[in-house]
Length: 190
Image (cartoon, rainbow, N blue to C red):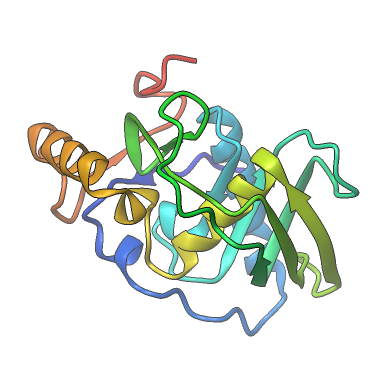
């Protein structure tokens, strides 16, 4: 298994819809294993293929949950069905997200409280479970990556302005930027 560099906001693969996986083969399984290794090195709770430069509809997760779902898994060609997203502003203490592709930053974002997650595992077997609370947030966050969205693209105006100001300050928004989990300092201080 190999730790892969994590792309940073501005890399084109992060901003376009990923394509469907058509082959469940050894190449796919190697990518999945490398994504798990990268996520572990990055202290992440999830990682989508576009975050390691691969424009395919795959994400992995590692998140202890109280739902009837594994604490670790992979979703290939996933589909999410969501509960209604509350219209209120997010709680600046309770609803804060971060992203390995917008490293070191945190902003509040309102998400649906539950998500039905359907798709396939790395061998093409069906996966179907319901995620609630923070686990549902993780599922929505990773799924967004497959549609070319980062959580900062969904922020309320006041937080979006802060995020874009920070991106500019960090020199992000251009192709070719990445960081290496396990080599570069952990941007979230784990």
